Amino acid sequence: MERTVPLCLKPGLLNDHILRRSCLAFVPIAFLFSASASLAQSEDETPFFTFSGNAALVSDYRFRGVSLSDEDIAIQGGFTVDTEPGFYLGVWGSSIESFNGSETEVDVNFGYGTSWEGFDLSAGVTAYLFPGGTDTDYVEPYISVGRSFGAFSTSFGAAYAPDQGNIGSTDNIYLYNSSALAIGDTPFSLIGSIGWEDGAFGDDKVDWSLGLSASWKSLDFSASYIDTSKTGDLLDATVVFSVGVSF
Image (cartoon, rainbow, N blue to C red):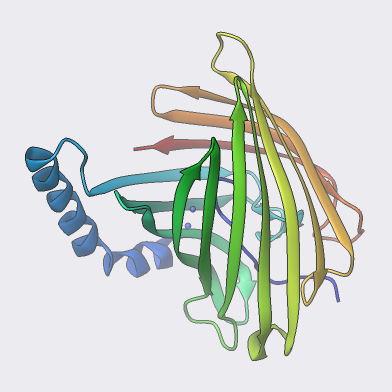
């Protein structure tokens, strides 16, 4: 059946007042990690913990081609804690259209990343949580491999949600590629992605995007054309604009 409920795979391509409350529980952890990182760096040049975060405003929250904000503006944000051995913990959220009593999506992912022979490898699991919702939460393991060739970088990945009651007691598979090409000595990059999904959230569905991104100091901007092989109210082809800040 075609997906009409929130799904997330947020590496790149992490949201509202409920999200801010949800993230409060992680604030002491974040400060502890930051303090540990400073201490580690004073004793060793490589900090054990590093912390990064982001916040963004998007004209439409599209995930795998489907609008999860009813084609309205969404507020998004999150943070990631990386460790020197390669393990990481990330929290990301977005405002969404009401879904079984919830108006916020919060994704918590834990995984391990490393580099080998020029390839960037990552594997982990994401828990998709919908505060206030009923029968909404589920988990999805994922893997990805990426590599850069000068100005061009590309990544291939797979996300598999096993049979779970909250996704209709069936499974779901999503395969994707995302790529970026830096444009000379400019702050601009061409960005694109293509994905295929089948199972609980997609019936042999293909989604794709092509756009332009730019960075200036800590600000990030993008505009992307997004479409899918399916039709429907939340699947209309559109151009999504975003502006965000990274720290």
